[in-house]
Length: 294
Image (tube, rainbow, N blue to C red; front, side, top):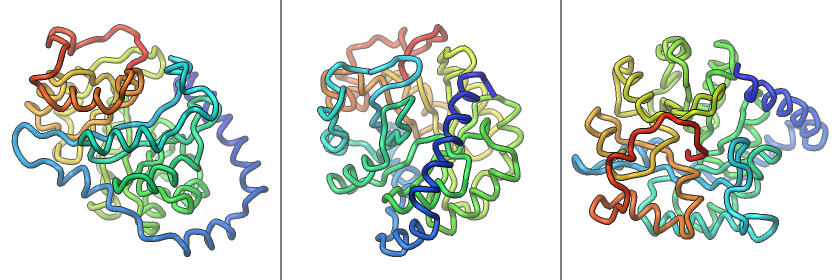
């Protein structure tokens, strides 16, 4: 793993030891039994496309990141209201919501998921560094409809065990890769054990260098047979970016910091979805230098 990812995963394992002492798995299982059935995240994004010009956007609620720090000053402390941002995303055409729940590095919290779901009817992805089955129970107990699994964080056996448990808990899995080697490793398992619960994400951010390059998805897409379940993550900033991805059959994207960095994330999403209102020229749609956008 890249050093930044190694640091985060090590800290996550230490956090988990404390969480398991505080809330035993048996308690999470009781919480899950009382939860409503999850919203269908897979259907929300994969069935979204209506025509050749439609892209399903998973809009992310993200307060900070290791590369960018606090994204905007007003996101500090209790003034950060994820439900308000989610309402703007919903009104502006988001297909689903991604919510960061990691506290130390991303300023997130598990409680954000329930706050978002109480505010909008969209399904919500728990975006975190999941390395233990406990976290899937935790996600489901707190209302998540989908979870992110990062291939670079998991051995093959761990990944498959988590995918089986996710399906049992009715959680959609967004299985994320960056390196070609990991894509080839996980490609046979995408959608395991049930196709209707699996999406494949390609992260355009290199976690070793923090560089972001939209062309990364386009290069690796040649190795993906079914592009209808492919999600391009990070580095999407303009409607021209969406058009380039659609031209290669990629019609689901996850957009985070670009939206959260704007004065009004909802208006930024409208601009992204509407080519006629996009103020950024197409020449800005390709980039490979380090920057905080994702």
